[in-house]
Amino acid sequence: MNIRRILATTVAAAVTAPAVLLSVSPASAAEARPAAPSQKSTYAELEKAAADATKAYDTAVQADSDQQALLDKLMRDDAPEAKPFRDAVAATEKAGTAKEAADKAVTEAKAKLTELPATASPQEKAAAQKAVTDAEATAKEATAALKTADAKKKSEQRALEDLRIDALRKGNAASKAKKDAEKAKKDADAALKAAGECVWQTGVSSELKGLPAEVVAGTTVDFSFRVSNGTARVVDLNPLFFVHTAQGKAQWLDGTVWKELPDEPSIVAPAKGVKGGSTIEVKVRLTVDAKAKAGKGDALIAGNASDAYNPCILGPMKGYTFKVLPAGSKPAGDTAKPQPVEDKDRPTPPAKPAAGGSTPTAQGGAAATPVTATSATGALAATGSSSAMPQLALAGGAALVLGAGAVVVTRRRKSTDRA
Image (cartoon, rainbow, N blue to C red):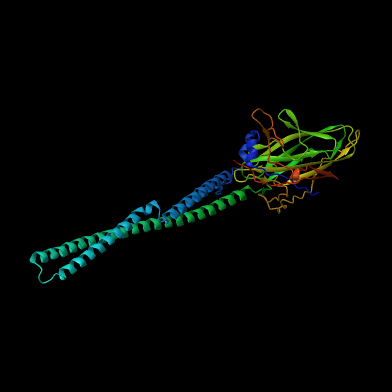
């Protein structure tokens, strides 16, 4: 029988489910192993790191854009920051024109002095000489003014160039910071995505207890499912459970209230904070209509979980089939046995020797001391595909394909909004 399941068990799902308190006996509490120390980041830390990296990247993008805009503005001749240089250039040009006029005046004054006739009076010669002296003084002042203006122009040019170079340097730094922030964001997003992928954990095991191999029409049978945390960590268990017959109704016991099971694989009785070595057990009853014809029924159980590091931990799945006998038949009294299940989403991992030399099966470690999952009011945690696990969805909206005792369920992984 090939069975594929949908389950993206997430921390968000555990949060939406009602709180579950575990009643642990002193013995089992003492025997529970503490969580193994780990240096890796929790999923919440990875979420924060990804959010911080995104924020840092957005800031870097804005800073780079602002810096490039500033650089573009500084490179324009009409930039406000270039006004001192523009004024210095204009002052230098004005000083240069004044110097040219002063130099011309000197030349003309000297020419007039030279052209004086021999008959010129001493007064005329003195006036011509004074004109040359005054022109030379004016030219000297014009030369000094031009030198001062040119020095000012060069100073303002260097200041503007320094401003532009600084902006260019900051622009390059902003571009590099944006590139670095983009890489950090990609790395953080990749780490979060990797942590959010479903992981395979044989230590989270499950089984059905007391499901008859034969159920007679018109009768009700009681059994239970158990999910064990055989790991060394504290996890939130999210049992994926399903039982179906053509003319039957299944219920599970929530404290003192029997609740109907959905006719599709659903999260039933999620339990938070289950310590290593602990087990939850949920009672189930199946009632088959008296008019039901002979046939088969199907059930499956998977001990899925989540912890601080992995929002989606997939425990091995077990499938069961049982016969439906006509009313009045006498059942043999045997219990249904787990059937081989091929989960194509995850290949069956090779068996590894467990502590003490035993070899676990593909279904995971053995269950430890049972622990009943109860709410604060003493009732089992309420659940269902619509409330406790909104992330649970059947691929393509299809429900189940029933036939020859086979149940085909498709699991679709998807990222969960954990905001």
